[in-house]
Image (cartoon, rainbow, N blue to C red; front, side):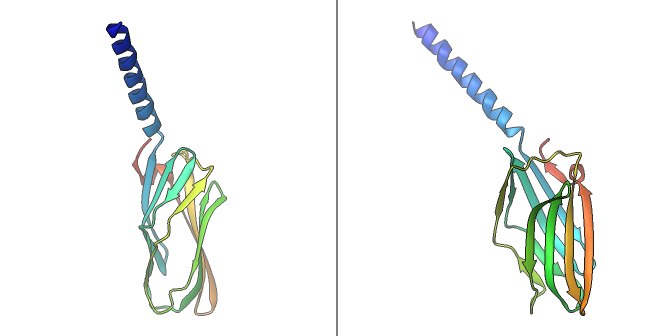
Length: 144
């Protein structure tokens, strides 16, 4: 009887370990810096797992030149679909460190696809629109 009980416990343990390892295979971490002419996005990280996208609060927006830029909107796109957006002003500072994180449901990245950052702002009264697109495989830090 002890052998059967021990075999069942061992079997359950092996299945649990297997399922845990399988669940971790779906975790992917992407990291990048994005460089536009007036604005840089530094230390930007995306964590994708379980059909969710997590954007941790470790990234920064940095104003590069001394131009008068305002009304800044940065949008993150995946397969031309809106994922998230940030709207802000630099005011009297050149660096904005983000302290908010985001969890977006129903997002599963395919490493062969691309993401894009669209930025729009006013520089000395003139509208500027820029896009930086990157393949996910090129910014994959950890995962499949």
